[in-house]
Image (cartoon, rainbow, N blue to C red; front, side, top):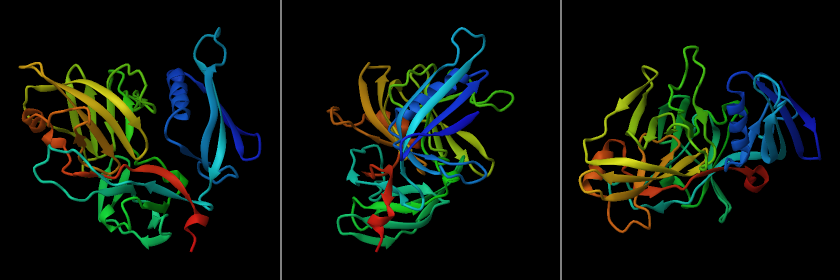
Length: 339
C-alpha cells in the first residue's frame, strides 16, 4: 500500500510497504533511485490524475525492515519529495553539449549525431537559452525498442551545439524508453511466471551480485568479466532479443566500471586484455537513448590508439559517430521559453 502525506509547502512525503519475496531487493532499488543522478522524478496517479501529479526531486528517503524480528520480509519505504514542476509549468528537455570524440574504431565516420526522445513526445522544439531562440524540431529517424519507439532528432538542425531539445510528454510515458542498467544476479531476466528477477541499478557504486547489463531497449550488453561481452539487438517484428556475434579476437573483457547511470545515457569504462600478450587497454563506453550501436572512445589516460584486434572484436556493435551529444534529461520552465 502507499500514501502521499502532507509536509512542508512544495514537499510531499511518500510512504509505502513492500512484502513477500524480493521485498528487500525492491526497497534497496528504491533507495538507490533516491540517491541517483536521475534528478527529476515523475510522480503521478495510475489510471487517473491526482493533485500530486508532477515532477519531483528526492529530498530524503530511507528503507528498512518494518520489524526486524518478524518472520518474512516486510519493508517500510519512505521519501520526502520536493516539487520541481508540472507539465503545465515546465517542458521536458534534453540538454546537450555536442563535442568531438576519440572514436578510432569506425571505418566510416559519421559527422553528425542525434538526440533521442520518446516518440510519444509532442511539441518538439529546439531552444537556445543564450540567443533566446526557439525553432521547430523534426525527427530524422525512429528506433524501435523493447518498450516503445524513440524519435531521433539530428543535432545538426539545432541552433547551436549547446541548445536544448524541449517537448511535452504524458507522465505515463516517462521512463519507458530510458537507458537502463540491470544486475542480472546470475539468473534469467524473468521466472516461469514472467516476474522480473533482475535488479535495476541506479548508481555506479552498486555492488552487482551477477553481471551488469546495459540496455536502451534497442541493444543490450551483458558485461561479464568472466565470460566476456554478450551482445543482443531488439527485433521488433518478432518482439524478441537476438544475439549479435562479436568478431573472433584474442581480446576479452576483464573489468567493467560503471561511471554514470542516467535516463538519457549510461557510461562505463571497460578494460580489455589480450590473452596472447597480456597487454591491457581501456575504452570508455557510452550508450544513449535510441541508439542501435555503442560509442567506444579512448580515455584521456590511455596513450595508445585502440589495438586493431580489439577494434575488430567490437566493430559489430560499435558506433560510427565521431561526435557525442553529452545529453542529459531535465526540465525547462515554460516561462523561460515563452515568446
